[in-house]
Image 1 (cartoon, helix red, strand yellow):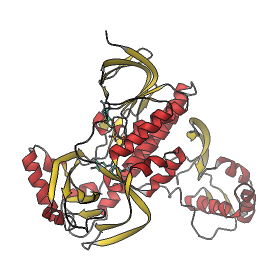
Image 2 (spheres, rainbow, N blue to C red):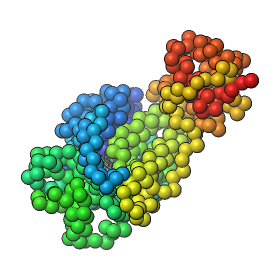
Image 3 (tube, helix red, strand yellow):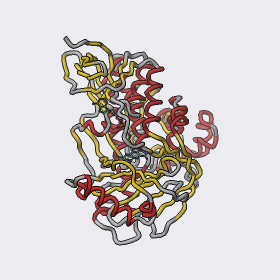
Length: 466
Ligand SMILES: Cc1cc2nc3c(=O)[nH]c(=O)nc-3n(C[C@H](O)[C@H](O)[C@H](O)COP(=O)(O)OP(=O)(O)OC[C@H]3O[C@@H](n4cnc5c(N)ncnc54)[C@H](O)[C@@H]3O)c2cc1C
């Protein structure tokens, strides 16, 4: 008879999303098992983390994991994208190149330290719903095991193959690692080709990883020799990477799906998808890992809210809406980025990837820096409504009053951590801009108070009064 174990939460997949949600749920007091098959890749997989991940890791107390896995911090990259010329672009804050297996292992260790039971080298088979939870057969290094769990988290990455909706044009990345003797291959190189784009980065001294992103149809049905031919041919067309052909390709090529997509359902009363199992974004942004971690953080609050018996519906609505919104925003950025490649007549590869994503109707939320002069008298727009909306408050999802206005993409409860509904309640019967700023300054200090009023005027929440 197969041995059994019980848990409150079972997380399938110990990549960044799975490790972070398992850690958060364990910290919040939930009995949590994290299952990961932890396959050692045949070639080191190097990815770049944009500096925008740092505040997220800091807020989670996980910056050490990055420090342990990063082998290079880059403030410069060679880019050939919006013009035919190569530019050496400098960045104020460095991006970190990490070896993924090392980074993921550190995140799983952090989950274990927080109390999650981490089962490594363990493969999850198809989970089945039963009354009151899930039955998950797994294959451990010492034999089969059945896990019975009240809640199931799918963090198996894109390969989980949920019911995928909104698939963008299918893209695959073919990557190889080159041994070379050229010291100039010491930094990231990004190159836009005619029907493809390239991303290269150092892996270690004398080793350089080069990936080519092509429409999936070009690589479909090719055996490994023909795929290698295609890869070499494409690399030879890249002005920034063709120098690698003087070196030697080491090991096997890897081919990965690099298509942006979103799966459904994202969340139910006893089930959630996080990270790339929920949605994936175009790798062009270098923000896939941080997006996966954010989805795990938001997911942990939704799961915690459901498991503690608080209202499940707002938690489900919050998670569903936040993931949909993040996926659409990422798709818009990717489309803009593809569209900014203008240095020759755009082929269908570029046209398809820069189309079909509507611009958001609202003003940018975080933009409180407008310097436009304020009208002397303003009033609250008659189109403004205050509605209850689910928001993340610490580790729970709760209903909170939010501003709902045609100038906003979605109801907004907080802006830069400031609750907005009380500000509106303060000024319902006031109209002098100076008077409003002075009143809000008691809550926010003068400059933020003025910026807040400017932003509300820019969005149309406050309108000129006669
Ligand atoms: C070519 C390419 C380049 C990229 N470059 C970057 C980059 O530079 N920067 C960046 O931020 N993002 C990049 N990304 C995106 C990034 O890789 C993903 O966003 C990130 O890996 C998502 O994390 P995750 O935890 O959701 O999924 P994954 O990292 O895929 O983790 C899933 C985990 O689940 C495990 N698993 C799967 N099935 C099972 C099972 N049945 N049983 C047990 N365990 C299982 C896997 O072993 C894995 O550990 C790139 C993506 C591609 C395709």
